[in-house]
Structure formats: C-alpha cells, structure tokens
Length: 196
Image 1 (cartoon, rainbow, N blue to C red):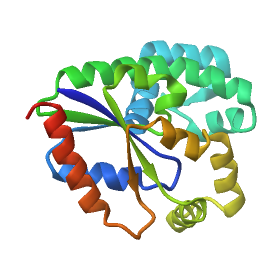
Image 2 (tube, rainbow, N blue to C red; image 1 turned 90 degrees about the vertical axis):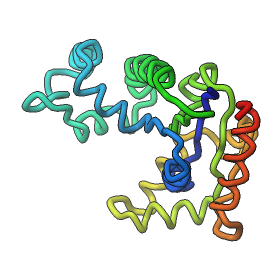
Image 3 (spheres, one colour; image 1 turned 30 degrees about the vertical axis):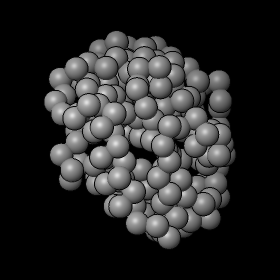
C-alpha cells in the first residue's frame, strides 16, 4: 500500500481535495486534527508543553489553543520549539495509522509535510495549487481572520511555488479546471503505481 502526502498552503483547498479522495473510499489522515487530539491526549506532549509554555497552556484539563497561539505567533523560535514537540509524535502517529489501512493507497493531509520532514515517510506527495489572491479570498470567506492576518499566516508558510516543486503531483485548484476530474485521473494513476 502506498503512503501519499497531500499538502498545500492555507486556502489552497486541500481539505476539499481530501474529501473527494474520501468519497472514492481512500482513507485520509488529517494531521491538524490528529495534532490537536494528541496535544490533549498524549501525556508526553502535555508535560513538554506545560514545562515550556507554562501551566496556563491547559485550562480545565484541555489545551488552551488561543493562549498557545498568542505565545508562538510572532515568535519564530518558540514556534520552532512547539513544532519540535508536536511534529515527531504526530509523524509517529501517522506512520502507525498507515500500517492499519487497507486499499491501494492512503493519504496524509498536512500543511507542513516538507517543513516537518514527513515526506521521508511517504511514497509520493500531491500538492494543491491556487493563486495567492484566490487563497486569500477563500480564507476570508470562512470568517475569523482579516486580510492582514491571512497574509501574515501565508508569509509564515513555505513559499508555495517551492512547495509545489517538491511535490510529485500537483492539482490545480484555481477554479478553471475540474478538480474532480484531476482527482479521478490521479486516483487511477496511484492505483496503477500500487499495482492494483
């Protein structure tokens, strides 16, 4: 069974693409959701976060995401420390998840595949590409962030062109080409690569 990564910057539409693969019966590991669960459930992570960021990191036994975000958002060194605590555990969790999957391939959806070193544990990577303005628009439509906040988040992510260069396959999600057709073609191609 092939282990496939699915990545793209904020607003690229990688979750939409992941959902299309799900409808095709392909299992998808959502790294963001898994990391959030692990930050609450994994004792090693809880202890390390509390030691590094203080007792206020957990409120009533649950991770205080707003508090943690306020600590790391404008501090690259602290963000790197946070990632160094969370990424290895999430990567191990995804490796173990892959071993339990059936089918020709399974997918790990994650924004930070290359930044975290996850690609070393994957056979192929799919990138989801969309123009910067379209990505900003999509995130603004979701609500919760203003334009400056969206751009600030984008600026903290790996350059999108560089990310796509590192991917084995790229899905164009600019709204001009059917993503469903692109996913269906890729699905058939991945099945053939897996010998199914």
